Length: 474
Ligand code: SF4
Image (tube, rainbow, N blue to C red; front, side, top):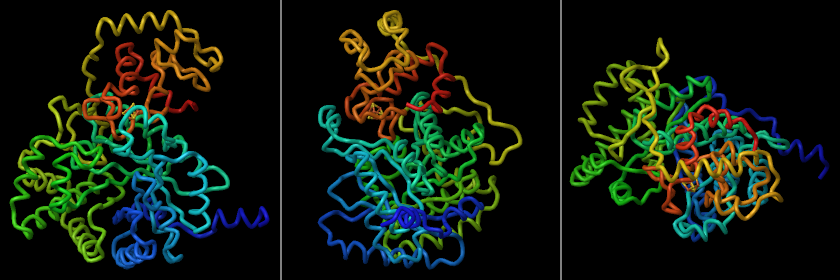
């Protein structure tokens, strides 16, 4: 194949209706489906997907699209491969996820090639959840992970020109998990992301904070909230911690317990009402759309699309929506633990757009113990001049005291003398969505390395420096 032919195939000159809808301010509803397990016959998996696609894309009023999500396990189908088998007319109305878990850059690159040749236009990059079998430091460190920031660079660098999406987990409840997630999100935009999808959750306060943060930093990118339509089975699984990254408060657990005692019809009607309220709220809070998981059967998808459309018509005023939402929630506390940190004052009291910028809150004093302070000063004395150093210069003492892994370029001084390569997933650009509610790493059981870097940065009054580092290439 000649170079010209290759270039033409990789950059099909078709439009991109999903991108147009998002960028022109249409409120988009994406119906999400997971790739089927590997045991399922490929043709059967494709037929299921085709039936769903037909229902979703048949909507003429409102904008609807299909999202195909990668599972975290390599033993399942990859979303890009499966979506490439769908009929060719609507590939610009699909959002396909690409997870870097258990993938090296070569495998990611091969998948991108498949997606580009199939004419897929919209890809969301995720680093991927940590699969259960890898939740030990040893197995995790021996497994390849391609960080979402690297996938984003690949998606938007020649020969590719995908409309690239990033993900963020805004449901964070300590200052450093929250800021860490925001900083990483900004890094993803600097790596080429053109839109954003949140992790699934219920906390509308956190969704509004995200919009305010984006606006306050002039990051005017379309953003989509991922919402869950619960079935009794899924509610039960979430209650027992079966969905990684989703943390429930005691109040929320009690609420689900109560709902699970209802009749099937009553249970469903509560779930649909919650979904309607969330979707309508998202639009009023400045989101560009919602992605619904738990509705990937055609009849259910059809019903969800109708209900969301009706809810968007029902709520055109923020105040009316807020009254109804508060009545529905009946004071249920969503934050999963008592130390809930909010970056802004008066969240869910004001609409978007707003007349005056939101006021940020003071961060609480960081907890830094005396031994930790002493450790910081001794490492600073020993390694204060190592910024930009090449790996050959790393010595035993550096390895012992900072966890140094001999990175391509040393950034110890700006990382408060903690080597970010000690993250078991080797994520260099910030906190992952799997971090525990209190900032601990689910793999090591100790404080997440990026959480610690930010906590020490705050103690040293250097948080703004960490935010600026977002735009520094590693
Ligand atoms: S160290 Fe932090 S970013 Fe790395 S895997 Fe653990 S929680 Fe995620």
